[in-house]
Length: 144
Image (cartoon, rainbow, N blue to C red):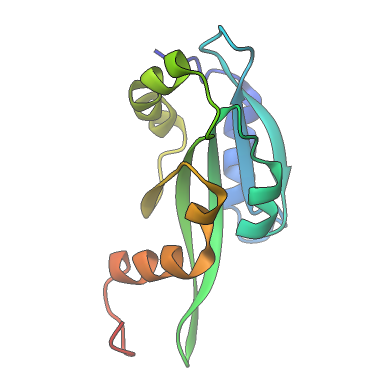
């Protein structure tokens, strides 16, 4: 079981969810290689490109992000995603625990439209994620 009890995680979650706040994402990392305790490592105001820059190849991390996109010519939407990052050089034992820990993380980072499993930074390219968000969002007047 992952320990997600740090109050800073809940505070950052509320800030990402707040439309009036500039913060658009938060990053959770394990306290150490052998720990199952997750801590808030960083928050940011950029998009998926900024998130790609902070993820490390040797780590498993969780990112909760607000993604803004145009659904059609008339509207803008904001949806929330959970990125489950397993870097290409992440240790085997850490990889093995991620699926169980993801359920624990979702108890705190509750509201999301989609979960994105990312093993490489290219898995976080904006276009395919926005396409999935459009499908998950229901009505689309552009036939997407």
